[in-house]
Length: 262
Ligand code: PGA
Image (spheres, protein in one colour):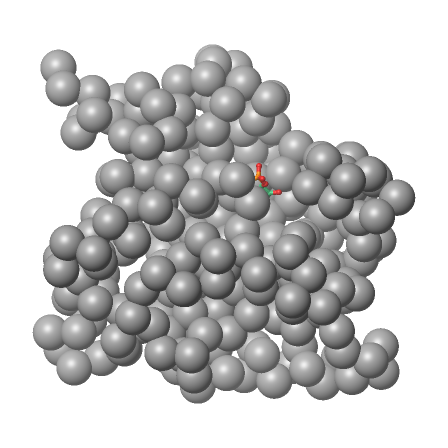
């Protein structure tokens, strides 16, 4: 069987899980879904709305999208994007910011319009955050909601920066980052002490508002939390389990991330 184009499909109680040989094969499939969505909505004269994530997980998807753009297979002219989260406090020009990541790894290489890009701001005054978050969520609604939300998963079970303890009806807000999340970011920031202590994130409820959600995970270090996400009961202690409540969410894994599924 050509495992670069076909995945094994397993079902949890509710979330379909697709397991690929490796992250590149899985990412080609995810990029294809994005391209299909962009084409379908564009043909109808509508603007596709993508919810985007940062971290190492979506990098091969972004590489594939850039390749498809360079080969004239797709245009991002009418694509609207909303990013999930940002560190707080951080300047967008800081190399480790989610903003810098998005420009370096995707936006600088495709024809997306600057005005269509939305990334939570990490350099607000503290007293501006609540209103900023309300406006960000209103903008998502004004654009008709997110068509497709990409997610990674942190080893804490976070989606966005919704760390353990985040409830299902949480909205966009400032949050304290879990110690494990800061440890995992320590190399990027050249030491845990340099990792910001907070983040601004779409809430669980904001994420669940997307029409379709694709959560991706690669590597053995994600296997435990992936097994909890797919097989455990829904709990605020593993916020990713809330995806089990979504009617159109799927989990895309490489073999290593799937190795603890029973
Ligand atoms: P990673 O992070 O893609 O760098 O593993 C995922 C996450 O924390 O959501």
